[in-house]
Amino acid sequence: MYGTVAAISTPRGKGGVAMVRISGADAYGVLSRVFSPASPERFASKKPNAVYYGSFFDKDGVFDDGLAVLFNAPHSFTGEDVAELYCHGGVLVTQKLLTAVFAAGAEPAGPGEFTKRAFINGKISLTQAEAVGGIIDAESEKALSVSAKQSKGSLAKAIAEISDELRFLAASVYAYIDYPDEDMTDVTPEAMREKLVASAEKLKKLAASHAYGKAISSGIKTAIVGKPNVGKSSLLNLLCGEDRAIVTEIAGTTRDVITENVRLGDYILRVSDTAGIRESSDAIEKLGVIRSVKALDDAELVLAVFDCSSPLDKSDCEVIEAIRSAGKAGNTVCVLNKSDLSAPVIDPPFGKYVVISAAEGKGKEAIEKIVSDSVGAGNIGENDEIVINARQYSAIEKAVCAVGDAIKSLENFTQDVAGMDIERALSALCEADGRTVGEDIVAEIFSHFCVGK
Ligand code: GDP
Image (cartoon, rainbow, N blue to C red; front, side, top):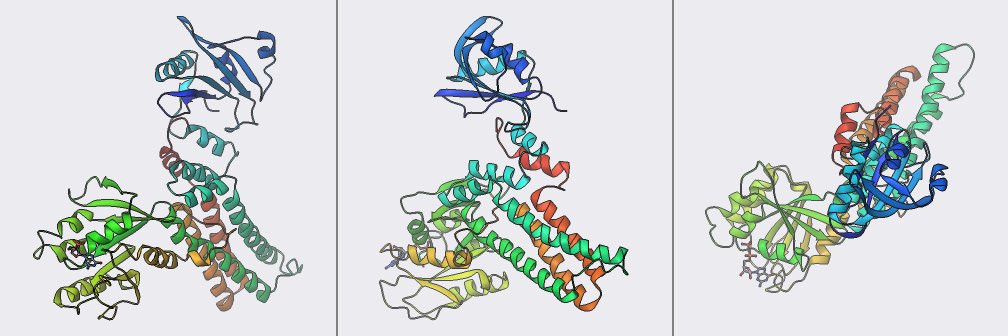
């Protein structure tokens, strides 16, 4: 049993209305100690899902009027008794109401505490709770619509369907082990293999959607590299367009390593070491190449810029070599810039390439298209689930491996060995949906929410 907690659930600042939410067994009690209803008889009926008008008071008397709504356990967001108090949206009056609520017996709610209670009380799955966080954090329309859909449980449902299929197979294996003579299972090794392959395909598809999910939410770590004067800064400006980037300094790293979030259609590119890119226009020769390749190590996408109007020289080759030795050849897109000066006279040194003219503002769509291809957007259907969250992704990956092992075990050993692999896959899927995650992980997830959510 958890205590009764309260917090302001609307953003801090002036607005028409603000809301203080109270959740816990004593929600009605706390409310009645700060709220004087206009119709006491009606309020005494404690009718849930109804709106009550009245005034808010503290030890010094009435300070505002407003509305209160009651929800009874378990039919509330948290699954507990909940009272929502709507006062006028001033900073002082809202704070005064919260202080009165604390004085009346509620404890301050921690970050994400209401959503955490909803999870603990079985009102929502962890994937749904994480989707609520995703709605709050969403910076692109696409990320918002994916999170909104998943907050209704669509991803949890997709995971549950795969779990059900695997559980059926595990059960038939154990029925066979426990009662070998009873012919309890009619799942032949061939049928089992078929079902496992089908589950593996579904899981792989979910896992593969993460590249896209990440690109529309937290963003793709991107390095723009190239020798001095090829047009790296101009490319960055082309990508940023009017939507000038948000500049964030990464704490604890070198002072001048800066990441800029560049929005490219639905995608977010987190371009690192942009300070290096900017400086490279002036100072360089000695610094340029070395600095820009520093960003390579971490990059998920490398935009390697070349001046396509002149042949590759020694410095270009150094850049190419640096990309290869960082093991990033597969993640690299060659940006053949300055196409306004001449048709490309060079062959792109890596497979994927775009021809652009940053100076003429041409090529942004081509880059967006290549980013879209590289995150597999074309394979994602309108109704497919998209895994945005890294924690869910790593659990689904574990399940992919375990189902793969089960298929191998079935080929090389017997059904009961495969059964153990299926069990591992099931526990990974429980983890993905949060049914088996430890308390510390739950605490960590909700600590990223704001107070009041
Ligand atoms: P960086 O050193 O790689 O960051 O290169 P900059 O973006 O500073 O560009 C170097 C020079 O090339 C500048 O004078 C730019 O105006 C010029 N430049 C950049 N992109 C283009 C292009 O597409 N066409 C032409 N003709 N010049 C360009």
